[in-house]
Length: 227
Ligand code: G6P
Ligand code: MG
Image (cartoon, rainbow, N blue to C red):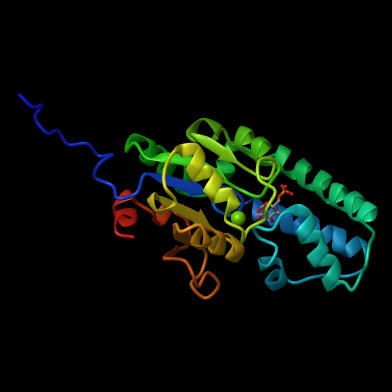
């Protein structure tokens, strides 16, 4: 006799995995990146706007610095670039080392827990090389099945590598994944990878996202099923 069909929430979702960017999606470290880069630019004798800062989101450390130096009209050697990037990172690491679990953005922990309960796999997809410090300080590390960050993947968003690696580690196809991103470059990376993308921010900025919300507190599994 065949087994009676039982309800299985895992089978009832059209997607099998969620891939989360870190900075600006789960935690508000985008603000710390901005502060540290601004401090560096100011030391070098110039400033940049919050609008310009939007272009740095999702972009790795060295590429971000190259953009900033361009805005200031400065040219530096590779060796000087390494020194400046290290200086910025030291300030940034000082800020994230002081982070507390209550700095997680609203709804993040709840959504991660709901997804786990529903049997949906979860990976981190971040360009940051500091993700392990942040996940430790906010006590979120245990909620992820895989961590893909700047230490694992070299290509910077909008290249889809970080998300494709996440799908591979979770043993799912890209089209079975939903990406959560606050950066224009990150939304582009998810779309380039063939995934559905939820943008965290505004529709004006995150034009290519399949759905845009102001934060993860607005997301439910029911909403994700409709994507
Ligand atoms: C994220 C942020 C970027 C940052 C990058 C590298 O993608 O959105 O602003 O430049 O990570 O971060 P890291 O911690 O390695 O300097
Ligand atoms: Mg981000």
